[in-house]
Length: 153
Image (cartoon, rainbow, N blue to C red):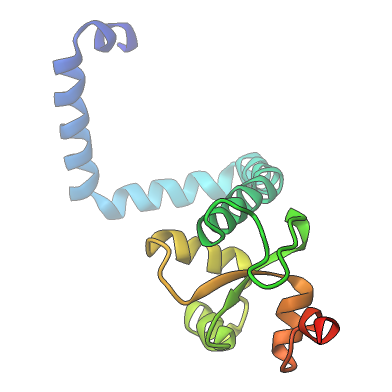
């Protein structure tokens, strides 16, 4: 069947459309089958968990790099002290309302970390109100003044 669809793409398209329509019309049956299969094949669950454990950090780093590149205009520098070490850079809410934003993203459980924030930024086309700071400047801003500005004075 696979070879047939390779040589007859119009048939493949028609088959895919009818299959999608059938699944849509028989949602309960499909869900029951999937649930049963999931519970009777624990090796599938184990494999999915292992793949997620391996791939999640890679995805997080890729997403972080994308966000930092956007908000630093591809310079990968702190907006305050011009630190360039990638591992030291982080996202900052310009109006100091990061806690409100994390609360909106996570609801009541407060578990929205940077990974959810980065994904939200990408989904929403990188809205304004964010900047890239190094961790020192970010914490200094939290307490009033960036430590680099104190040293410069």
